[in-house]
Length: 140
Image (cartoon, rainbow, N blue to C red; front, top):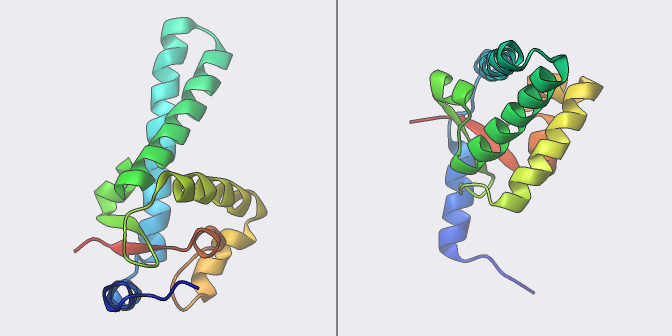
């Protein structure tokens, strides 16, 4: 059985007490990320002239932005709103958690309830945050 060290417990307590991102900051970050992906896709569409090129570019940009963004703590939209993603232990996300959060985020997005959850949760976590054990915090 693994027991937590004092340092790990302090990180967890500090992460829990950090100021959480407001819902409008998170929504604004998602909107910026969406438009950044859409614009990138549209540029490719203008160059290629095919809708499938736009769709593929949009999807790839969105995937890369979220996966790489969450790995370093911020997407483009999160950077603009000065918020970031950390684990509930106060650390940066590993690739496994990034992948799981992306899957859970997609499920939350399509189920709507996963996003609405943020309004009622005392830690301001969406369903995807709960499943991936992450917080979205105000960057200090």
